[in-house]
Every structure is written in C-alpha cells, then in structure tokens.
Image (cartoon, rainbow, N blue to C red):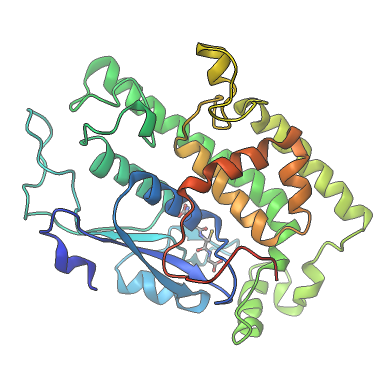
Length: 330
Ligand SMILES: N[C@@H](CCC(=O)N[C@@H](CS)C(=O)NCC(=O)O)C(=O)O
C-alpha cells in the first residue's frame, strides 16, 4: 500500500526502508536496527520495504533524499534507513503551543537518517501522547509529560537530545573502529549478487579495487584477531561499561529506589529503555549477525552486560515482513 494514501486515517502506516542481504538471513544492519527498535517502541503502525544493497542509491534519489554520508574519497555514500511518515508534523494540540498540522493537512515526512527518525518519532508520535510517560519516551527528560515545554523543561529536552547525539557518535565510532573490521567480512550477502556487492564495497578501501574480499578478513585464531578482540572488549568496557549497571536484571532488583533502578539492564540501570539503549542494541544486532565471537561478547564481555541489554531489548525487536527468517548464523 502506498503510505501516502492513508494520511487522513487515525493510524497512518509508516513505510520503513531497511537493507536486505541474503533473503534467508536475519536483518543485521545497525542503523536500520536502531530505527526498527524505535518504531516498535513508539508503537506506531509500519511496514518494511526491503531494499537490496545495489538499490539504495536509486531508492534515496527517488525519494529526493541526498546522501548524508561520504566515502573516504569524497564520493556520495547513500544509506538506509529511511522512513516515510504520512503524519509529517506533530498533530494539532489542544493547548496553546507550536503551530502544528490540523488533521487532514499533514504533509508526508521523508527522513533519511536514523537519529532524525528517532527525533521525529519522539516529537510526532510520543510527546503529544499523554498516554506516554517518562517511562516510554525515546528521549526522556523533565518535560516528557509536558505538552509545551518552556524554560527549564525545554532546556532538559534540548539537553537530552544533545547528549543522545554525542552518545550516538561515540557508539558509532567504537563499533566502526573495532566491530566492523572484525565482523564485516562475514556479512550474509545475497548469493545472487554477492560478487558484485563485494566488489562495490571493496573500492571503498584504499587500494581496494585490487584487493580480494578474503584479504579483508582478520583470520580467526590469529594473534592480530585476538589482539583486536581484546581492544574491542576493553574499549567497550572503558567507554560504555559505566553507563550500564552490573544489574540483577529488570524487575528482579532487590531494593527500592536507586538500588532497584541500578539493577535494570538499560542505560543508567533503568528498568525501561530510551533511545541510547537502541543505539547500542542496533550495533549488537550487527555483532549477533556477523561476529564469530558473538557468544563470548554477549555472555562474557563486561560481565555479560551486552547480553543482558540485548535480551532485554527483545521486546522491541519484532521484524516485519520476513516471515520464517530466524536469527541463525550462516
Ligand atoms: N548516519 C546514518 C548512517 C546510515 C548508514 O550508515 N547505513 C548503512 C547501514 S548501517 C548503509 O546504509 N550502508 C549501505 C552500504 O554499505 O552500501 C544514519 O544513522 O541513518
């Protein structure tokens, strides 16, 4: 169904564009995963359009979205996720506030960056909805239940978003530096297009056009691999470990107040997630799908924090449109 056709219905359906590699493999692209988690968490109706790697550029340009990333050589790097939301602006509010679209006058929003998508979901689908409390906000702040934040509450909103932005950059940087080289060569390409997909990716690396895909692999069992895995584990613990409690698990904390909250598996020991948890979760999905040492990372690194977080995020991990495809390593 064309998403724009149902703009006037109370629950318009969002179209979510994610990458499909091997149709038999479970999705594993980190940034689209951040968006999937956020969509499921916001509880908005959506349908997934699965886009092969070699069709991402055409998809973005058909939607009028310029590339937001560049390759090392300065050329455009077209990416997913994208969403198209028939409800383009926050719905009209009953109280005095910012100008918003009246019902039936919404203009479709087309958004091509995972962070901007999360902000859109917060502002359009979560903040105006009084049923949502501080517990189920992507960007929780003092003003989460306030319709028209001003003064200190508006500052808290801005602070929460800015800190999330910095956290997103940090997490992307960490996983790109260590996770991508350790896991990327094991991506489950579509067997019908694998040779062309690999060739298209190889040219992104210095001297890549001349290289072979296999040359990018850091061989299992090698000292180089062991060393990089150790660095990855240490970097995650040093940069992110203190954000997540050693916890006994959500809902199983033994005390009240601070003590109980610190037992939760999410950011700050909370018992419910915010967007920061989905940022890490998106990358953990990539590790689950591609890193040969995933079980170790999940259960042993940082005392099992990453596995606890990953499991706790399962509630928001439903995949639409890939019936029968299960998370099995190929
Ligand atoms: N800043 C962008 C980055 C998106 C991005 O890098 N997406 C990757 C997948 S995680 C992609 O589309 N890669 C396409 C390719 O490698 O050809 C966002 O957060 O949406």
